[in-house]
Length: 537
Ligand code: GLN
Image (cartoon, rainbow, N blue to C red; front, top):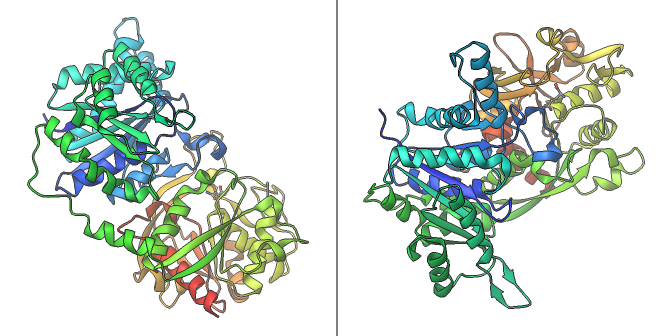
């Protein structure tokens, strides 16, 4: 049996309180005190994973090394903790039911009636403990998605209740995150929503050990006392979480409030050292005191919901700090870019990033943006679909293949410079069937990409079905776009660049998923560096 301790994070009053950031910040503090910690997200929706969700629904789909398509909170966990997550770190109701139903079909329940309690809750508990049982972690933090009181959250809250009972109070605790709203008309912070949400949790048999209260204003001692009294916790267990300038301030704020200390005390753990946040604070200092500024155009079709590009914008922050540069993002809707207005819309920009995506909406705008960057020697970074658009633009305008396209957008394209992988041709299911997860790539020395990574063999995460068509490689290279990164096993092109251009790199993989606070992604760092240089010209 492992000695792993469990911390559950539930949320009340409203969604979007930032449970993921609180969980990640607590994990960071515990990690920097010397504990090995991981975080898991349980999502109460019925999709097997967010891979089939439109980004407008839930923002970006985050991909792990093992090829799991997961909730974007896992991106925060990796960015804060600097350790990889995996499929085990994200579980949905769909996945839980799928395993239970598969077992039922195999007859594994031996004729029993299969029910939410105990079968679904047992499966939830099994999934919660998978990470703990590896023996790799002292503490597993499990974030329960949704809000307490939702019908779909009930089996999760019941599973938490059972685990608290089974593990004992020094081995499993609950942090409940709530909102303490400020009523301007009354000039007061209000505790009632928190009281109600704790009551709701208690109706399910779970009493929170710690309250973390999101607030716009300082919570006075009096209010803390009131919250403690009515929510059945000690006053020291009421932790204020005040709005922060950046999400990266939250570990420090939680340290000031002593969240890590109350957690350790409740779990009967002690740590003689204070969390070592020097490197973290070094990042923050540079992030907050930039010496230069650049403006990067992010061309995408989901720009109305910024969360759709979460890992990219966070990677800009990491790379910006590393360059002591403020990265301003100019959000450009690819559908709004036309041959008439693109020069105006992209005027004065220091770098252009064409984002990942699916389908043909906004494609012409993306191609126009690539052309603008290429012809004007503006630093260009294409990611996944963005790289494919760079190849298409080059084939059309430099090779003169007017009907060059991707078979994703045009099935019968006469020049399918991007086409479906052989292994994808008979795939009919949409969920979990793309080329996913970590793949190796060998970089050509003497290239921009090698210069950025400073090594020959890299591993990066993928999420796509279409590929650079190797039948066109010779012609494309002859005209000056070179494949500088190749998958050593399959020969697939992973990176293209134009050596005669100041900085023009397209990657078939998603570097943004691997950028963290302590390890800003080298490609983003190099791109921002190029943009900075360009801005000074
Ligand atoms: N739609 C493209 C493909 O499937 C690109 C995917 C992406 O940008 N993630 O290959």
